[in-house]
Length: 117
Image (cartoon, rainbow, N blue to C red; front, side, top):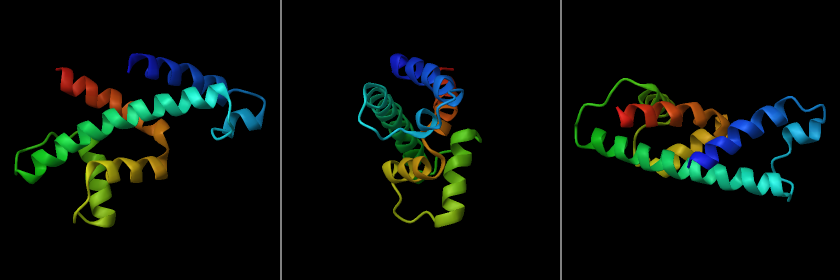
């Protein structure tokens, strides 16, 4: 997981500040950098899915949940689409589709920080 974050945090600035628009926006071409990106993205997405599943389970059981960034993401989705039958995988995928996985990196760091305290 650490390697995934390290790679993504070094790769994002490299792409963002590149003078080549193709490099900035091309996450789909079959090349080594994109394969590494997809591998790291999957690792992050899998971890976030586990954490979201845990939070959704707590909410289903009626347990209190902290008012944190993760709760905000869940509530935002529920407000927009409703709560019926949504699972962690669907919630994470929906968020990744609209905001890209890049925005989940800070969320994951906040979640991990909360979990480790």
